[in-house]
Amino acid sequence: MFATLFEKELKAILLSPKFVATFGVCSLLILLSVFIGVQEYKAGVDQYDTAMQLAEQEVREATSWWGVNNRAYRQPNPMQIFASGVNNDIGRLSNISTWTEVKLQQSAYLDNSLFAVFRFIDFTFIVQVVLSLFAILFTYNAINGERESGTLKLTFSNAVPRGQYMLAKFLGAWVGLVVPLLIPITLALLIVVVLQVPMTGVEWSKLLTLIGVSILYFTFFIMLGLLVSALTKRSTVSFLVLLVVWVLFVLILPRAATMAAGQIIEVPSVAEVESQKDRYRTDRWTAYGEERSAKWRERMEPAEGMNEEERTQFLEERRPQWMQEDDDDRQVMQEEIAEFERKVNEDLRNRKAEQERLAFVLSRFSPSSSYQLATMNLAGTNTTLKTRYEESMKAYRTAFAQFVEAKRIEERKKLMEQQRGQRRVMIFGGGEEALDVSELPRYEAPSHTFPEAFGPSVIDVGLLALFSVICFGGAFVSFLRYDVR
Image (cartoon, rainbow, N blue to C red; front, top):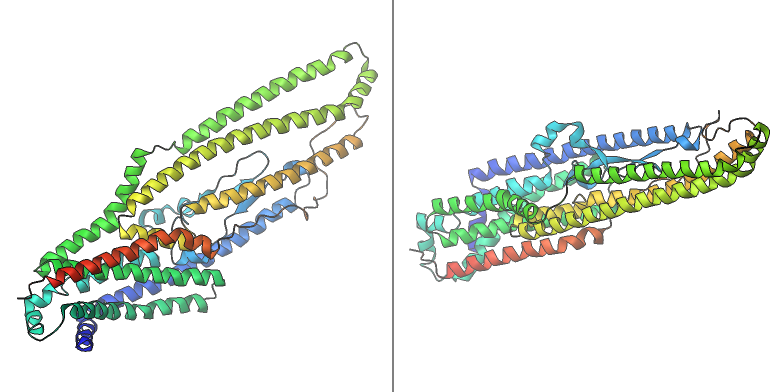
């Protein structure tokens, strides 16, 4: 009997005219999104390679360490093809120097604001929006539709256990909807292979897990459709209820949670933070200049009664020591500025993290939010992407600044030796030959392992599984009391 019920449900779905239309549209969207995503990824890789070459060329052409700066670029991620997340919203590069703070800038949406209006359609978006509607369309009348047609009463005129009937309904709908979708998904993976997207073993593991989570999310909406269909007598009512629930889960709750978190936990704006940093930086440089002028006047007091030759000798004997003292004072001042900026950034980051945690907790009442958070975590395109890169760039900036500062001191000592005895000593300048930058530290993008990706996703995957079980349990209990007449 179970096999007969399962076969009946499966045929009802596969032979339905709406299945052909909806399945065709979904398949086309999945394949197109992956194909376009691959093209966008390859364009990003070409842009990344060109920018890296230009930055390296600028460094190689420098003739003085005082003019050596660098840029660190965010490396394109193949997983952005399937879950773009915040990849296009955050900056793609940061200037690296001893004078400026690390800050990602020039996002993809900044260069092309049109895409910021309509956003990017990726695999995650199609599953989250289109396929969830696809599941509702085929399950809203799974039970009450048969009651309206009279087949439910006819079925239970025989000795059919209700639990067995409900299980056959679910498995038939699941197999009839999920298994055909594996065809375009498989073709999408084939596109990735044929177009030679460089995927590592870790990234393939992430992608397969992401597909599994997508199927779990799709399963939830199948069970939700069965639940509402078992709670209502008319299919029109169940469709309306499911549509309202879909709008609530997919469109309203995630945004409402973000707005509520923004009102509960206030975070200073970027302009306020930058203004605070600039004010402190300006005050410290002004104080440093005044202290240096006062110290210079104090140093030159013993030379007031000397002639030109004695004055020159006096300066040459003491200049190296003075220059070292000035370097030490400047480094202390720069460290104080860096420490202040670090504290401001840490406070901002802590407030943002607290706001994000609250927003995510509130939004997880929606399975749609849980799915989106899980896929973004797996793809590495979640809200921590900006923090990961900026932290790695700050570490690189420290190594870069230490190396360049040591080279600048050597360069200045060499110039002082070359110009010793001249009336004016040129501290800053460059030679005619390019610098040897072979030992200059190179920036390496931060890694993102599978445990680091899957760990934050466990809660969301568990919530999706819990929501699915609750819906199926509710549908099962409701159907046990359902009036089949």
